[in-house]
Length: 284
Ligand code: NAP
Image 1 (cartoon, rainbow, N blue to C red):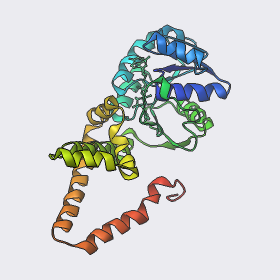
Image 2 (cartoon, rainbow, N blue to C red):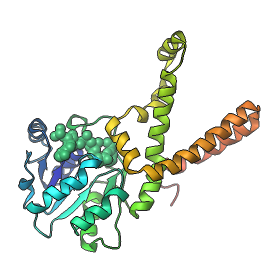
Image 3 (cartoon, helix red, strand yellow):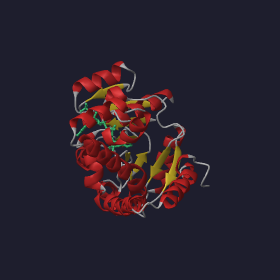
Image 4 (tube, rainbow, N blue to C red):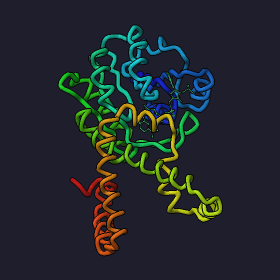
């Protein structure tokens, strides 16, 4: 297939590399000329430029820009496309995008690869990033079935595990497993940094090891992306954050009132259940 990618950053470049390995022709478009030159030089795209018109003859285009730029990019792209071109995106939120994008282009299919790392930009790209990772597609009643099938087959060929759900359910679920953890981790780092005694803060920095590395990773990721999660998935994120705050208050109460067995019970339940989120076969 002749495939376009707009936004050659972590996700766009990782997609480009893998799709080329499968024999597809990949045409990239990004904002900066330097990104485009890197994409061609490193074999991420067959050709790359800053010109959306270069995507004219593509059969499918993945929009992999930051969330705020997805719908505006589609608006600017439309004049250059054949009517049967399929558009899809990689945005981490779907409710704010899918209806608007579908109204602009009926051959649109919302997508979200559940894969990434804490880096951003083309230099952060990873080969095989999507292998064995969930890739969520969010069709609505208006989604064209043949477009959905094409996107489904293509992302499945990357080795991804494909799920279909509504944009609303997607946003509620990712609020729990992606957006809430970012805000919780960010709050933990921020609370540490606000330790009032400089000596204790200095010691904490020196003593930090694997526990801090694990719990701080997602809170110290791309700030622009964290902001977009909050801005574009506000309601679902707040819903999760309020429930989280209740749980935190419950743990504080239990510690204050020295209910050690209750603490142990909470931790034992979590210990037994965590694998249900991380082992894809555990909840068939
Ligand atoms: P990223 O590394 O920052 O890449 C986005 C790239 O898009 C930038 O490197 C930039 O390249 C280019 N760009 C920015 N604005 C543009 C515009 N208006 N037009 C064309 N290109 C533009 O971000 P990412 O992590 O790949 O995320 C991309 C999308 O995937 C986001 O919507 C995000 O929600 C979603 N996503 C991210 C992850 C993750 O873990 N990172 C996971 C799943 C989904 P230039 O250098 O050329 O400006």
